Amino acid sequence: MAPSPTAWASPLASPRLSYAKKQNHRLPNVRCGSGSRGSGGDENGTPPVIRAAVSAITELLRALPPNKKPRQAAESGDTELELPRSVEDVVAVLEADYQRAYFLTGNFTLGIYAEDCLFEDPTIKFRGRSRYSQNLDLLVPFFDSPSLELENIEKGLKVDTKFIIATWKLRTYLRLPWRPLIAIRGNTTYDLDEEYKVVRHAESWDVSALEAIGQLFVSTPKQTGS
Image (cartoon, rainbow, N blue to C red; front, side, top):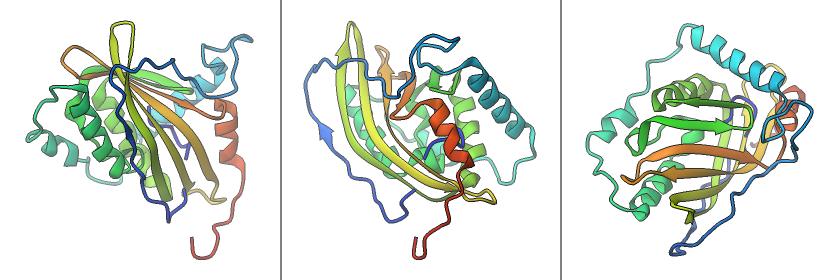
């Protein structure tokens, strides 16, 4: 899932897109982060208490009255979206979504995801594209001077599953009194079904979940001109 207020802001950076066209290139299942299994952690090395805390915070935010109208851009755009017919079509849609910095704006193409798509990152895991959209709407107001840079995007094949993997760098201040700066580099794997719908959206980061959450508690004054 898009990281909860724990992952991400160089305001002058702009997305740089690079589509590595590698036909049927077989890629390893990339996993960033320093976590290891054991001590009650999951496959990402994330302690259960961290996952429980992130889930609780997300549900608390969901229960609060919304401070803006629900986002409708993606839904209205989907009415004109021609269904992807190839992996390349999905790559093109994702490139456009990254240009809109969808992690940070909530403006993404809902129609390329299956209704029950699995969304996961090192801190949370759930199903449902509508819930993912709602989570983004909850988090976007917290971002201040954010940027999302797409470093690379390419397609691959593992066993019988076609997938796309995107590598990105995200930075943002958070609208909290002490203005923490979140900076994370990671990748997102998009697993596709036979109809080229995304059935799994899985993030991994170059820091552990504990390190990412730790950034929340570090005061980082905004530099002049940022």
